[in-house]
Length: 459
Image 1 (cartoon, rainbow, N blue to C red):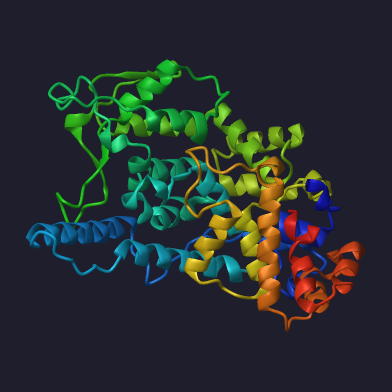
Image 2 (image 1 turned 90 degrees about the horizontal axis):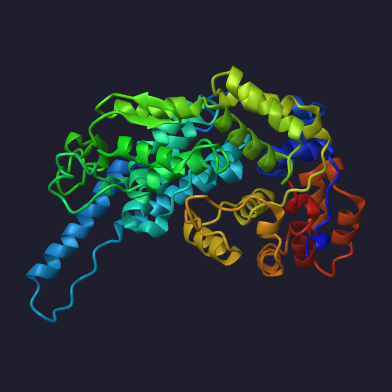
């Protein structure tokens, strides 16, 4: 089916706007001008470009408290009501929070110039995946997790992002570390619950070294033991500080732990923090991150020399992600390689919103992403969504895109698709795409063809 979406030549404007951005808005080729690399480099010069501070958005911890308060109100209502009585519904606070987070996120995605920082937010949120399917306690924190643990660090130090992610309540809940108790801890000796290795395993396998990084099961267990006591203050216990990270000494496994042949003797939360710092600068981590970035931005099977170069920059810069991205943008091969990558459904939706110039209502965003096969903040597992052409090029998946493109065509039938295509892609629009759009039987069909063109689907 991928033959229906031809691979694109590396036209510099398309490399700048598609490979490194979220897709073009009308007029964006003029902003890129004659210096596509400079246009991309300029976006890397703003370390705080990914920050999202909106008065209507609360912290993840506050969202969890609000959700728990509503749950407790429902419980009190049920307890006080006569048998068989119909209870008036309480406002679904978790839905309100979720919609506010979606609105803030997609307003930024639809309107930002270029969008490289936002692409990095999407990449790292998928690398450190959590899922709202875990329950309302994760669902109400999903947007806060992205704002608090991902956005501040996409051009900063990997070690800082790693600490922020692994101590965030959303991650601790998602991977059940709030339930992990050291077998020989004070609580462990009197509790039937024991060690949970989920977080320790995913830190090594997915977040840092990678599945082929050279660690052993003994390292997973030792890291999991060091992570015992990393938990969350439950709002039932403290409605002021509930939802925040906490360290519970009574749950922490006592004694030294050995990970990757190094012993860590601390007997508090510093034990696992030091492990994270060492993992953040490990050569296997450098290579794992370098390969994933190169595969995301360049090709499913990235050039080995590019991966080597990025891993070297990662190590020499002490995990400076801004330096790694500057090295990626400066690499000649990145500007010479064909655009073979296929946009994920979420990336396609954002690119289409940018073309049409509309911010889609939160409920519609959720519905469209569900139909496209990539539910928002709901990956299939801790390894996130796939990032290869094969993951998104199945006939059923492309048919869903075509159906959505046709819907947008019907809703925007006053738009001149040929003029819009020229405004969006400029000289990067291929003759084949322009001719197909111009030959359309109607404007609505022409817009649908534009949205399914290679210039829209490939990055």
